[in-house]
Image 1 (cartoon, rainbow, N blue to C red):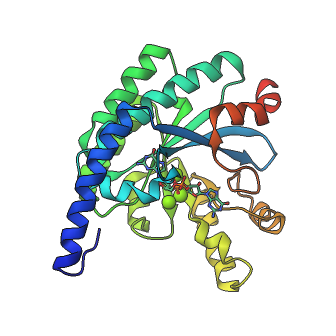
Image 2: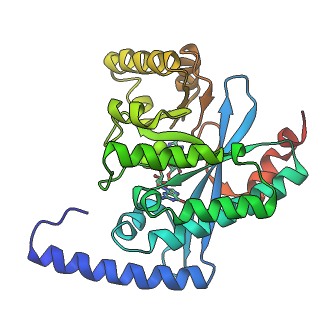
Image 3: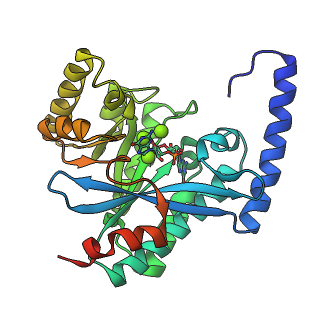
Length: 271
Ligand code: C2E
Ligand code: MG
Ligand code: MG
Ligand code: MG
């Protein structure tokens, strides 16, 4: 979190302190919830859901992680939250495995979570306890300021791969996700930031960039997931690029598990 002057530093410190305290209480009072958003294949099949954290705040209502995670990354609180997330999603996956065809779940792992190692240990423990196959879970590595050196990053990522989990680089093309990261991480999936899709209708340059990235990913044997598809035109364009996976409000917004089941159970039951 960037701070400009002393006043801002004090405000930021206060906010950080407040957040840490509130998040601890929220964990105890079950105010966190996982929402799920479908990731749809180009053939229309749904094989994957991304788990996205929500905080049902007693005063603020449903809060997006963008509003509180940046504070937590600076404190130790990110780790218990991450452990809660993976515990929850493995339980959900175990339940869905009993009810439906095998689907996969992706979740987001920030750099502090990756560095600590605790969240992945908890994930492995829970997979064992619920007989969930690691291949059904994709770890989306999200950008952060605290990215370690390439050797450390490679070691941590390889540990996750060795357990059998899949790896995705999230928000590729913006921020800290660079071409060098592809070489270090060697992910199974490359998730393109929704910024590209947003600019499709206004910039022809974006078309060239998208085409080039998709081609590069395919040459490197990685699957591409395009995020942020909101319209039929965007879907059509992305499909032409032979992208396999798509995600966005056009297909479905993130929703609580019961709503997801209500909407997709027929699709999930078949095959
Ligand atoms: P992300 O992993 O890149 O997730 C995609 C974000 O884009 C989600 O925001 C999702 O609700 C939103 N989105 C999906 N489709 C569309 C679309 O068509 N249009 C628009 N405008 N937005 C769309 P959300 O849920 O607010 O999450 C924000 C970020 O917070 C995530 O970005 C991820 O980096 C982080 N995050 C979410 N849950 C977790 C978590 O459990 N742990 C960690 N460490 N980070 C998380
Ligand atoms: Mg993600
Ligand atoms: Mg993303
Ligand atoms: Mg993001």
